Amino acid sequence: MFVKMIEMLKQNRKTLVFPEGHDLRILQAVVRLKHEGILEPLLLGDEAQVKQLAKDNGLDLEGIEIINPASYSRFDEMVETMAELRKGKMTADECRAALMKTNYFGTMLVKMGVADGLLGGATYSTADTVRPALQLIKTKPGNKIVSSCFILHREGPDGGERMAMADCAINLFPTEDELIEITTETAATAKLFDIDPKVALLSFSTMGSGKGESPEKMRNAVAKLKAMNLDFDVDGELQFDAAVSAEVGKLKAPDSKVAGCANTFIFPDINAGNIGYKIAQRLGGFEALGPILMGLNAPINDLSRGTNTEEVYKMAIITAATSV
Image (cartoon, rainbow, N blue to C red):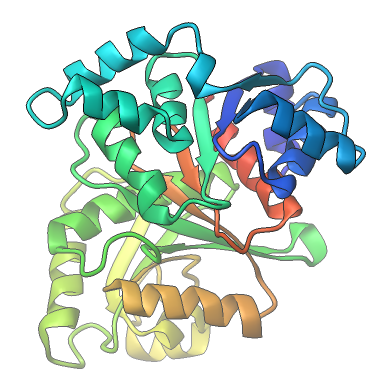
């Protein structure tokens, strides 16, 4: 699945900043990424401590840059830039204090063009990764929110199975308009993984079979999406069985181009989304890649604090690929 992305990155090398240079999982993944020629990693932390950790674990950091915020030559310029960005909300002294933390410092490296993207969250919470991105990188023109999706992959013949699910990690109770933005961003992300998006907006109801605020929200969002000039099929509201089973889809939504063949799923709220992707992951045997953050002006992604080296490696590739 990653072959295409890796080849693209080798032809167009990107610099990715890793705020948690003191974490062994990060170091192991970074060494592999560097030695395979996939991207240029930039580690943050105390250089002596990072190098000692690498040495203790037999890792070769040759050619990998390590930056300590406390001794960065452009630190005063960074403070000035951040103070301007946060004018009226943070003083210069508050910006200076924030930039001593590697999550803010790394985000500013992206803002200043030193790095193309950032991958954090091995020790930081999701909020600590997303907050600096919202404050400094901000959303893309036309986007009002940051959202997230997971790519679910299961090995098999012909490349296996892949599907996209959103929003499972960021927006608690998205509105109709937020669902529209989540849907279009998720379809674009799905295409990066060679998924031809057939998008189902999910509910406990199919095409008006049930009443309530949630199915009505999904139904209204679909109506607005269908009025747009989209390059993918979308339908709903659909129950999950109607979305994925050809037999049930034909019975419950016979005129739908999505029912029975959906591969991209938009949930009505974070409860459904988070539970749904984890059921697929644990009971369906799918690998869950993400959360992949969408809607930002630059690629910034969040790791689970329970992540492993392989997940860091793959999420780094995904993050760098979205900056190409």
